[in-house]
Length: 82
Figure 1 (tube, helix red, strand yellow):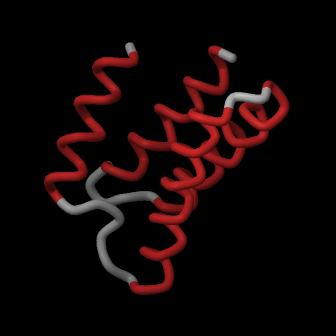
Figure 2 (tube, helix red, strand yellow; figure 1 turned 120 degrees about the vertical axis):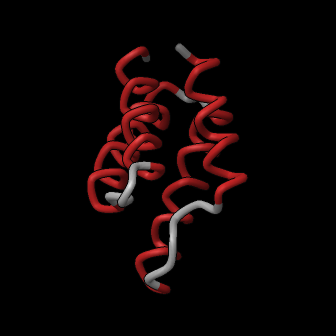
């Protein structure tokens, strides 16, 4: 499970990177999603799926993945998880 959390954090970091790297973020988040599904962890799975949806929307619109407020919240979550 620790590897899944690590993948989730790496994916999130790619989302908030400057410039964002949506493809790399999605790859790591999909790896995390697979592990969370296998382990039956619905809360973590939901969080990862929401991030994947954000990436998919960004790719379609061409806009930023996360607004500044969301990016700050994500950064705080990453620090908290460490």
